[in-house]
Length: 240
Image 1 (cartoon, rainbow, N blue to C red):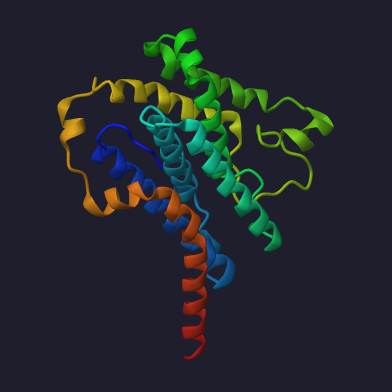
Image 2 (spheres, rainbow, N blue to C red):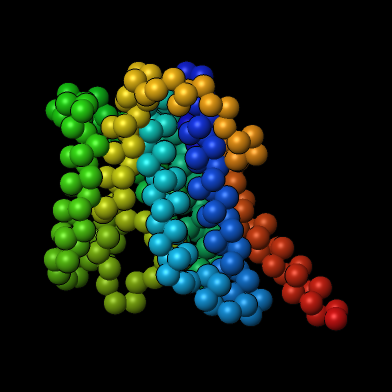
């Protein structure tokens, strides 16, 4: 999802590819449970419930890292948010609305960072950025406990919900925007080549690296493909 002005770092692409691969597998399990009658423990269980946030967090963190390499975070963010809004329209028609999913989150974060990234670098010294953003992320979780009443109808992108709220994919700005910003903080040192040499020289896992370089495309098309595969499996099962 990055538009790089430096040579790509295969380790990052591999890491991103692994996160995307696990996401696709997780969503495939959802389709099998929702449409093919597979037991729901296949999709939701303590292990996957934990890993879901690990690979989603990795995806968001690496998007922050990539912001240090982008020629234009504003352009990148506008494209990402535009695609997210198209997905909102499509999923609403399908009665499975995505109101503020991971692409909405990343689009807003990229736009914000494109507009304010230099100001943040001036205000917060680089060595403290990841720690400060992590602390702010923790604080934001506690802020979400505050009852904002009817305002929650407008604040759901930040993490407040209201009775009847639902979203097929939901990654609010609190606390996930701070994961993105923490990635940008670490990304400064990666872009300045402050990490050990092996970090830049490792050739990665080719298949995962290939997937990581096409993360946005995969994210957009994977659910329709998985749905088609699931329907195909159901049709095949009906023949026997």
